[in-house]
Amino acid sequence: MALLTCRFFSDTLGLSTTATVLLPEPATEAGVPAAPGPPGATLPVLYLLHGLSQDDSSWTRYTALERYVAHRRLAVVMPAVHRSYYANQADGYRYRDFLVDELPRAMQAFFPLSTRREDTFIAGLSMGGYGAMKAALSYPDRYAAAASLSGGLDVTAKPNLAPEEWRRTFGSPQAAREAGEDVVALARASSPAAVPRLWAWCGTEDFLLEESRTFARACDEAGLGLEYSESPGAHDWPAWDEQIPRVLDWLDPLLAT
Image (cartoon, rainbow, N blue to C red):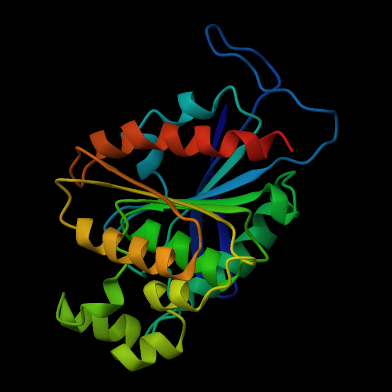
């Protein structure tokens, strides 16, 4: 894989930002099979989101992600969004607009990425799991599949958790729901025929386990067909390093279409 750090200016945020990008290489490195495709063909893309207090480099620093995707014909884009909750913040920046609108346009301008919904996927851990599900349920016409690892999937129900940061991000519980920031409410209001494929996992020792269960119940009640599982694991990188290959395996049939 080619590993790139992309520094670019965001009109949406009004500042320079970064994204870490993995791209398949045509050459074969010793012990690493190449993932060649037809000449000139565009690449399917996974937007892979980091968690709170992390950045765009975290997935490649703390997991073997590069090795896991090396044999796949798949680009991986990992943007930096700080502690934004991938939200159009009540008192801050328009990170949701950046994620779903500007980032794909910028990456497609820089790299040979597909613009088709069928080739576009989104996933993340913790805060990134929340961001991935929020994007997929808010813009189901843009993503073929979305996955959450240890997602903070009911964060808008907890205004007393870091209350000043929560207020700056979401404003109030009512404002959060009205702005489409409540993913549990989004799941309950979604049409099964419209939503992308959904997958979620959480560890049984994870402090966010109940948030994943709340989201899973909402999806079940709405008939969304979420593929949900739990297994031993905490809210840490060993768990996410173990689970991200499962996400990639789950996406493999879609990469073949």
